[in-house]
Length: 487
Ligand code: SF4
Ligand code: SF4
Image (cartoon, rainbow, N blue to C red; front, side):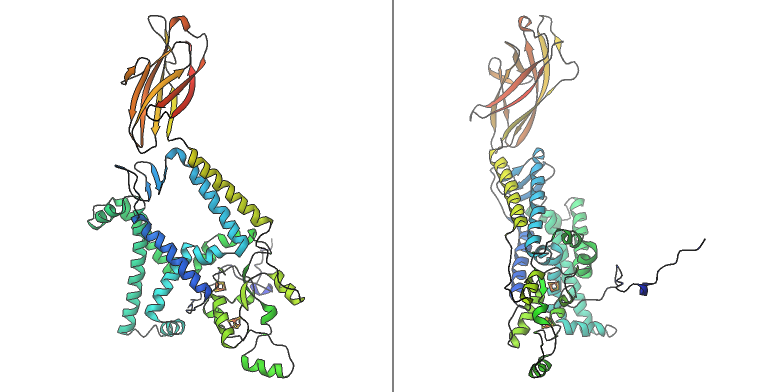
């Protein structure tokens, strides 16, 4: 049997390896509209992440006053005026749906703008690059220093040590800020400093410090290119109207230097606006050349737009040779037609309406949800007991939830077998047959209920029994239904 022959790479015309050896990227600093937007969004994202745990929100005495808190020991999630219990975990499902569809909407408007401006990997990598540039200099200087890596001077050693120290500090603070969302931030900070915090806090700080340092400091664009699934997913979600960072080759080609362009024009030859200066490549954080068309590595950050605009201004040509655009407009311009932009189209309308619908449902549910709840569970064994006087008794476990920030006095009534009475084990009753219990603010109480039907009204079969709990002060009522079982 013939052995299968491995095809030679060169037999493929456009062979591209699935994994290419890394070429280190040295993004150059750039200024312009998109760079300013990125700085502003970075400040907002990092500001929220690092400082939100310190924002206070008064929820009354004995309640945590941290605005954003995931209180796992007490099974509560607090976000400003919202307090969610474990039974309300479906709000998180709603949030995840809104977040996903918002991502789809962003993608259908501006391609991978999430990746370019808001993704944590981009934000932290950008911050780490800023530190690197501040200490080691801009692109050329860093390239020169790396090329001379064998010459370790004292100054160079100090620079590298300082850079890594600052990176580690940022990474450590990133991990530190994360755990502050899970406990009272000021107290946890004191405990951390005194080495008295729970071990799990140190563990999470260690995990996030190392991952931030590794992903933002060392792996950088490799995470976007090889690790993240979003570029592949978004490629299947996009359409021809999405505005992606595009080299307008209809304007740019044929590329040539300013000097040569003047000569060729004098000879009556067509030349484009691109002067082949490679500034768009030099500033790219993923190291690609956008003039080669749409590429998986492009995170749509717009920095090449800023770089090219600066060049165009300098040589007196119109800006936006690179810009947020699509192939349709390039073809239209080539045919002498004006470009058209369709941000509002069926796809974006459907996404927008869906987001509005889910957010609306969540807000409605949040505003109308009852802060007094109960669950009732019938005893399984025995399901019914016949007492010595012939009456029948069923027992239940009632779980009462008081989600409000104040104590409640609750009266319990039933509606089931005729003249049946309810008794709560251990509760005082001001009125006969109407037990009252006190339930503290933000608490759950479990009660044992005995419902007794007198002999003359004994039901012959199981019948529904309705339990009503009434807040005596406010008149708020909550109900639940179970069965009263005949022996
Ligand atoms: S090609 Fe331009 S938009 Fe794409 S990643 Fe590079 S700089 Fe950003
Ligand atoms: S920055 Fe503009 S002019 Fe320079 S190479 Fe890139 S596209 Fe051409």
